[in-house]
Length: 190
Image (tube, rainbow, N blue to C red; front, top):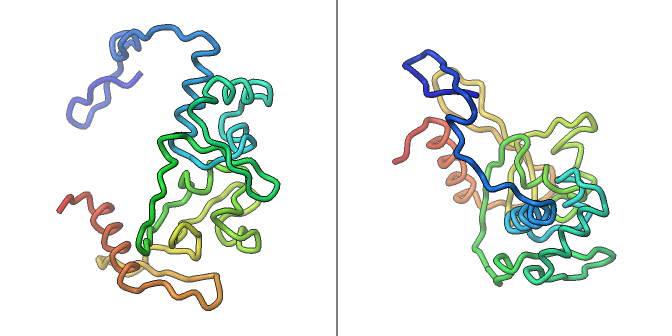
């Protein structure tokens, strides 16, 4: 595996020298741990979302969910049962929020059914049928548009476009999201 970098040179090391020994997990422990990590970070999600994300068989995914059943709340919406980890079950009300999400962000990629975050008629604007995901704008929990860094040399800029007709995104919040991205992409923490 990769070793400690020595200046600009890469080094390599034996895995046993870099990774501390871990307790071996039995299948049930591993399934429970995977389910906990998924539902803590992706709630609400359906069983189908978990199957799609994890690559587990239907039987294994159902077993994993059963193993952590006491930590999950089930909410029925339409025809879907949504599983919510207890740690995510707080009623959180946020003010208007705008985020610029990168291509392949977990917000879209982690779910088989993305209709809670994005109306199906706009899927092709957020990703294509070949598995390419585009940078998107998240506004109050919904994907509402796309963004790209502008092509102006030596000048930072972000171009945005909205695909939901008539949507009114708070320009101040959009500017804050652009500034957060500028600071992040420049590597500065000020």
